[in-house]
Length: 432
Image (cartoon, rainbow, N blue to C red; front, side):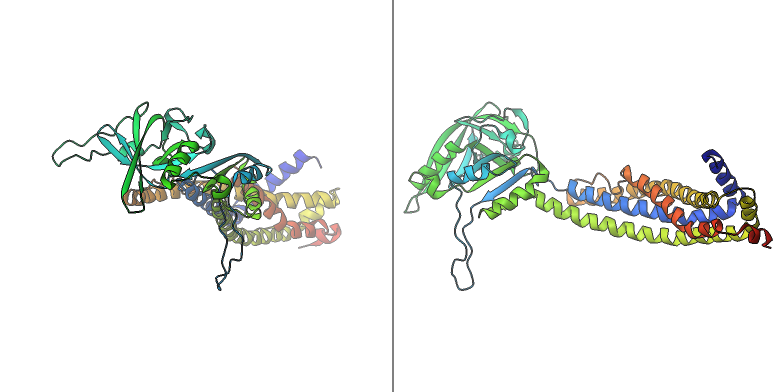
């Protein structure tokens, strides 16, 4: 039998029992719609959760810290101290996949940032690179290149400048435009008698960072050599990195997929390592399991629909027994009969799947509108940003649901179709 004739015969047979086919397909529609809506909800929740991770940082970065050892309950050190020295930088850089190793240090004393009559607190960070773009930050204005005596500030730093001589009733001072300006960094330390000692440095602001909603927004970046010099003045001695080590090192990895493996290797070397990717992976794993559970709930509905398809096909065979015998008597093979009934079962599954996909997508859009309206109100009350989506349907999901519903139809009609194909023509023709 030609393929075109087979399709024509299948459509004709389905068209003769429109009501029964429609009722059977309703079960497939409900099951398929449930799969689409529930899995889309799981994916939407995952996207919403990951989009709310403001300030989590560049996922290709690993923050490495010294390991100062661990102590057992008796107070004995059970693990040796592992400092980050200059040799450690070479050791970390030799790990496959690592493209950059950037040491960092913080100011050990107090600090005040001054500009004209205004001043602000400052989180001073020294970085061992002259190009901050490696850290994943972007420039709002100016440059990301650091040189001796220069500074790059976060987006929120100008907003914290205030006039210490301001009095009530006076106009509020505007945040200063610091780009290209010279600011004073007042470094504070205390001597052995508790007296405060200050030292002032002149710095030129060469760049302002774009808002990232992370640590960089409140940071003031200087060359590591400058911060090391300030700390040596605070400590009253030179800093030997091979003995004192670095407080922190940023390890930049080429690909996000390699980050967790590199972090494990760093831990094996004896250092402490943290990466935002491990947190994101935990969230993704949770929502992947949630999607599987949601999909399983929808699949149960499809299983019930599969029983309906099997019942419909079994009844159709009983009603068309003589027709089957006649087809075989005029030359139809077992394969032809099998193909006809499997095609009808697949047709019911396909029609139900198509209706379910459309219904599921439409229901998802309605849920999206209602959920986003509610969540936007919640976000406004709590001061956060509203989620971008509550239900998200990727392109692969409707295609998968349609194919899956069709396969369910084929499997449901397999036993009735085999019964029809193996009928003896003479017995079928005598059937009343």
